[in-house]
Image 1 (cartoon, helix red, strand yellow):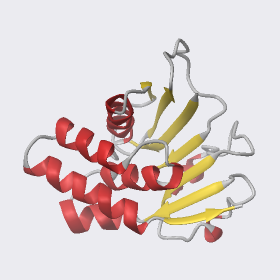
Image 2 (tube, one colour; image 1 turned 135 degrees about the horizontal axis):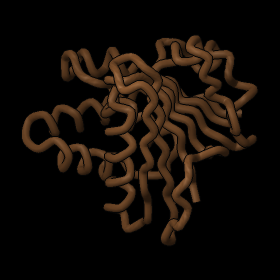
Image 3 (cartoon, helix red, strand yellow; image 1 turned 120 degrees about the vertical axis):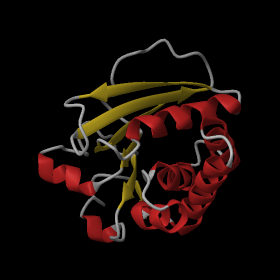
Length: 184
């Protein structure tokens, strides 16, 4: 089983991304579920979501404490006292929305693999003012290889029908192609 923690701030599409990710995993015939966690429900407040995927049914329904993957929609969340490295294992993978390279994040000692993507820039370029979740999902696909890009694009088109879905799928493909990956 793979367990993932999604970190971000209200309005960045963190919870939606976890749901779309789960939908993509299920499309591939695997099992998955998402667990949202809200604190203060307002724009800019810290938001967490959790997801699990496996080849067999998942009975566990708790929060994720020892993630295999950490997805951070805004590294500024660390300035709010959130420890994104909490509970990570030696083989945990990080996907971060940042203009920095993986080496510049200062997190290479905590994670086995890091994928960095400027999802805000990709989203602005393709969608205008919108949450960066589609670009983040594309980067997640390439960095972890836990779900295919095609399944993510299909899940995005399903969740957002019409032109919005197509544009979000384009943002995911762009995130997939532009992510910078560092590996121990």
